Image (cartoon, rainbow, N blue to C red; front, side, top):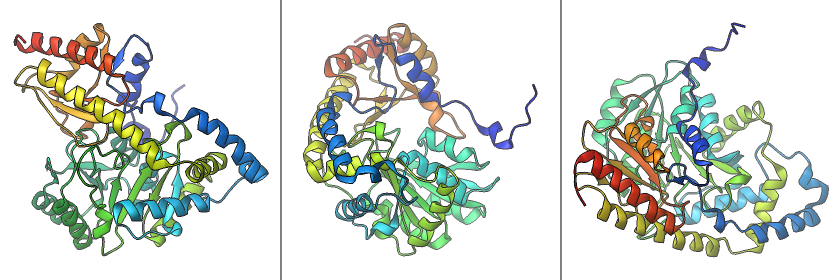
Length: 398
């Protein structure tokens, strides 16, 4: 049958990462593809105890509907955590619980974007954000970006000449896909430009707690004088992604708009999951748990970088992130990461080609690798295979 679908369906396509992850379900594949946490670090035993304790403490309330905004004690904890870590000034009424930070992206599209509006983003940027926003018929402008973040002069030039700019999307800490971190000066500049041109910023921060060296930077929101900056966060990277619990934080009036669109989407997030997370936070030391994650991921990052230095051809560039989950690889011009992926998959190694992270200007000579999910012995084996394939492609002997 020739179905008459909504126009937005013309903009949608399958997630690149999700399609690759179907291939990597084969346990023989060494996968550097998804941004998956290490499953051996999930506190399975503790969660089993917490599940029972939550039901004992909250009873039928844990199995009932709750408010759209989310479980109040959990929102209080999130606000206090953000204020402590990111130098924000949030209270619980500034927080909306979402189904992971991904729902925050979708709700932002509903709140801000009409067909033909423009989203400004880093170059490259998170591909699932591209998919979420594109569903609302927007177009994208990729703001020139270096290792310190968006270039303020370029961003201002775009803002001053783009009347339909409606949203600026940024990942300032250990950016997906590059692993880069914005400097303090660039954060201040973005907040100032957002206020000057009255274009809101969606600051996505799923990886900020996963810093392996250096000091934590304040949020872009810390420099917000106009109430124009919204912040996304999630428990997926510091606790367990299977709960699918995240949040969006911002000016109270704006959060009320998000509450309205969430009510039309799913009414609320899982009550039991919210209560179990909160109970865990009361019973256990989340900082000790995060420290354990940091130790393991730092070791894996260091090993990945060391092996890339040893095994990759000299004309291949890559980032050295201070935290997060990803390294970004840049191949010589004219080299196809997709062709490279085909050859690596034949040797049971997977990664994500980089062109998917550019909404407009796909660059075939880039790709992203994840270092958090695979144990060290598989990282070593996988990077060595990847290095051999690269050397064969680029004609260099190691």
